[in-house]
Length: 385
Image 1: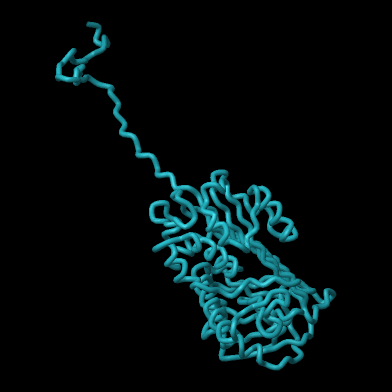
Image 2 (image 1 turned 135 degrees about the horizontal axis):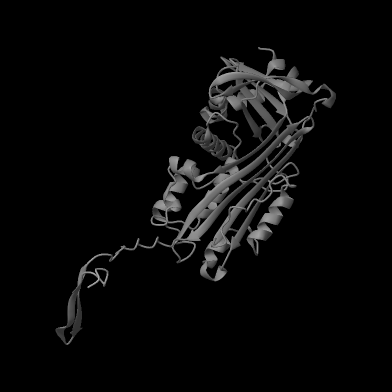
């Protein structure tokens, strides 16, 4: 095993797997087999999302938020629009949990409830109705403890519907890092595929952790309290993209994650960079690459289960904040969809500029056709005649 004091963090996963996965506050009626299938499907979605978002920069994404909002839209979609969504998220996903560490909130706003089918509103039984977009914005600021501010800044005043999922995570390490040992240490970044070494604030400690090495991939599992873990995987070659580490984590139905979970804990001397990352994604291009396109087209969208209005999704975004520090990790993600009424673009007018000689006629065209006046315009007095 390589020296973990030189750990790089190219791929990480905040995981509710391996003990305490289910919230004690909510009864989860899933068999062991169903949980395994749904988890495997989620891992596949995560892998596909990362493949589309990956651009060589830092990435953080909340798949659960994306799937939750897509599921809410699918409940009012029909035909191709619904089929495209269900091909990605299927009919069932892992439920969103709610405990002291990990929380989910769902908010909705309707500009005019009178034009929205009551059956659709009732189908969103785990969403809370807000009276205005401003109220949504203020509530999100409070729910995320100020981590996500101005979450609704891109929402149009003409939005017919706004749907939002708010995820928060506040995990405490089972064994925290000593703040006095945090220091600036070298980190090998990949900048446009080329290694560049720089100093970053790095936590250091000798902690209980699980470690697994398979081929070029090394992984470590750091436990939070209440059954949550951070999994960090990396290629031992510092000049290799973290893509291979992500593939190792999310492939084969989570087989490698399970191996890591089942590994015995040992004392590990670890150096881990502190993280403070803020990101924002326009999700529409990624969704189109994943086969979900019709709901974003005013011409093709079929959201006829929501309203008789010609609706389409013209905004789908995610805002995220992640902090990893000596005491634990804190994260928030807000995933929002804006649904508007499609108004066809007005036909571009034909421009006629009569700026040279012309002929004309005044025509009677009622009962019988008759020329009343006729003539030609050549100079309009400009020639002095």
